[in-house]
Each structure stands twice: as structure tokens, then as C-alpha cells.
Length: 536
Image (cartoon, rainbow, N blue to C red; front, side, top):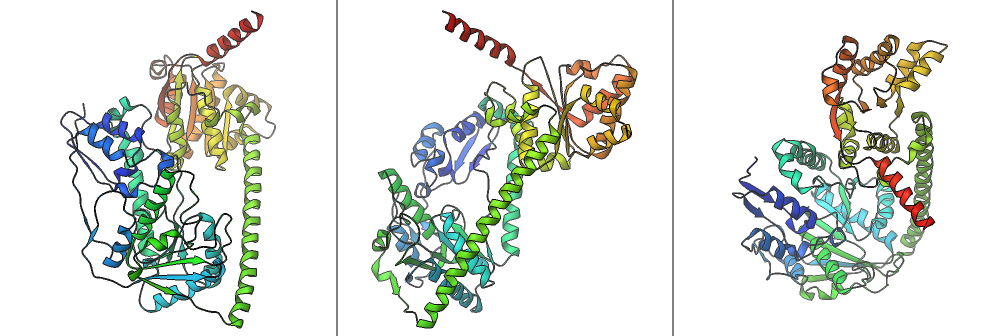
């Protein structure tokens, strides 16, 4: 049994109840626990996190709390501002220089602001500051639309953070499986290494690409830059309108995160004429909370010619945004058509389109493995990893395979889900040659063969089955098989014809035992119970 010596957790304030259970299940009797976090950076309450997480950790793990009061990133002026938004702990002390005052600017609207940012950022770059050391933070993603178009027009390099699925969670669904996952190396291979590789890729990209970073305040967490702009400092935007005290407190913590991303210089701005719905024309109350002696207020009046140029800028930018929206709508339409075409071609039964993860009833204990297969499809395809879903009648094997097929088709991956009975009919009815049928089946990135072993075992049929499987084997393309045959039957075939087929399958496909009660029996029983109720 695995017995870990240490568990080390970074950013522990972002943990939720499910992740705490994960840690508890992973911890052995001799395991030491070490966690690092900041309750002032709890900004994901919608994911189940909260400031009480530190109390829960101390209670469940018997942890001793140590405070690190010195900030080695930001200068003294920025830390003085950040201290005004602290909710937990004492004052943050700095180790750096005093630094320059925080600039506060007023812009008429987001268009003028965007133009100013292009000029100011280019000026900073000409002074020797790399673009990658400059970041623009905003509260909502929609604010980036104007910035993107104005930056593109000015040929100013910028980068947006890579989007990640919110539901991406490497934690096994059942805590009792966790130690087995780690002991067998599954958790490290499926989640940890993959996550680290992605983080390293992003870091390398950041180092290689000299570009300004545009991101929301949420996305800025964990990063740092020499020069930071926080835009849209208006009531109703920073902070957003809040319906509870808890939301107000989290908005303050979010602004604290944004402030402490800056190393040397910080610039804040608000609009006289904001364009975002629900945003007030008044500056944010947060500006009044900042130490007045550390602020430098600047306002630049514009000339008539500059105003005329800005009017054209607004018109051009709005047109670009409209074109972008049309392009997105067209892409969505084409995507919908492609997915519909793939499902028409890939499913032999149109009812299979409803076999999706969204329609899962939760009774199949192996369903999370099917989801993982989809999540890591590029790796599965690259390493030619297939699945052999075996088990009793009604245990959800076909449904699992259908969920995988539907999910990949939604990603515009061509998948064919069929069975050997239909394949044999195609071969028998093929006028132009049986090789074309085999070639077509091998052309799919993923082939799903349902109810393997139910076909007639004639010599001709076995030869065709072997040809299909061998063609997938030689073309290095994954195969998913569902069967009522047991692993014992597959490993110990009594004749050569079946043995060479089964041997290929076991090399191509990773066996997964589908257990649990018969879903068909459960559905039948539910219908019977309903009928009894109606007739009572």
C-alpha cells in the first residue's frame, strides 16, 4: 500500500470540499502535510471555495498556521494601496523600494482609453520595457473586444490567456480510489504531469512571445508584471453590483489580487461615459479607499482634430466588432452543420445521438473513464489507445461508447459507430469491391464496434472481422469494442481463427469492466411501477 511521506499543496485557498476529501483520502498515517495559501485571495466562491477553508484545513489535518508578512514582489507604494483591501491578517510589509505614485486617469469612454493605452504602452516599450512585462486587467471579458481591435489596428502585439474548461478536474470521483490511482501511477499520468506540461508550455510561450497581456482580474491570479493597467474603475464594474455582503467582500479580494500583480508601476483608469450596461458614470469607491498621498491624478483634454480621429476610431472599431460577431456566428453555423453531418454518417442508428454525457443517469460507475478518454483524445489517438468495454447485458457498455462518439463528433472528429452484422451486410452488398468498405472504416480516426461476438462465426465472417481489426492495427488508429464476452474468454480462445482476432484486440484496446445492475431491467421495473400506480 502506498504511504506518502509528504503532501505539498500550493494555492490551497482555491480548494473546495471535494478536493479536501481527495487530500484526506491520499493522506496516510505517517504523511506530513504542508500547504501554502492566502485567504485574501479567495475569489472563486462560485466553485465552492471560501475563507473558511483555512479553518477546515487546520481542523482536519491538525496543521499549525504560520504567517509570512513580507511581500517580495511589489514596491512600497503598491503595497500601501493593497493594505487598504486586506480582510485577513495584519499589514503586508515590503522589502523593495518606495516606488512611483499610482497614476489615476479619466477617459471619456473605452475607445479613447484604448487609444491612450496603445500610445502609452508603445512609449513604455520604446523606453526599454518588454511588452511581456506589461498587462492590462479588466473586470469582464467583453471589455477586451475594443482593446483587441484597437491593438490590432495599431499593430501592437498582445496575447490573451488560454481558455481552460472549468470542469477540468483530475480528482477521481470516489475517494477510496485515490490511493490506488497514485500507487498505480494513473493519477500522475492522467492529471499531474499533463497539467504541469500545459503550465510549462504556457510559460515558455510567455517567455518567447513579447506581447502585452490582456486578461480579467480573475485570470491575473498567480502572475506578476512590471507595469499593470487596471481599467474600468467605475461603480458597477469594479466592483460589480453585489447582491450580498459576501459578494462585496469577494470583489474587494479580487481587486486586492489585481493590485498585487504589479511589481513597480500601477495605473488605474475610469470612464466619464461608460458603455457597459449597469456601469455608473461615477468613479469606483475603491479609488477613494486608496491612500491619497500615493496617487497622482491626470486628465488630458483633447483637441478637435483628436476628437474627430476618435470618432472615426469608434466607428471602425464598432464595425470590426460587428464583423467579428458575424464571423463567430458563421463559425457556429458551420460547426453545427459539420457535427450534424458527422453524426448522420457516423451513427447507424439515429437514436444514438442522445447517448451523451449530459443524458447520463449516473448509474454507470465507469462513466468517468469515458469522459477522461474524450478529455485526452489527442494523447489517446497519438498513442493508438483503444478501449475494450466488456461486461454483462445491460451494464451500459454501448451507452458509454456512444457518449464518447458523440463528444468527439462535437469536436468535429469523425467517428463511426456500428456492429459487425451491419459491416457484413455492407460487404455483401458492395458492388465496387469489399476493399473500399474496409478502407472507409479505416479512414475514421475512431471506429466503435458494438456488440462484438454476437455475429455469426462463419469462416468468411471471421476472416472479414480479422481484416477490419488488422487494418486498424496497421494504420495505428484507435478502436473501441463493446462485448458481452469475458476477459477469460478473450484470453483463452479454443481455436486459431478467434485467437488471432482476440490477440489483436487485447493489444489495441485497454480492457474496462463494466459493472453494475442491468439498466434495461431498471427501466423495465420503473415502467412496471408506473403502470401499477396508474392502475391502482
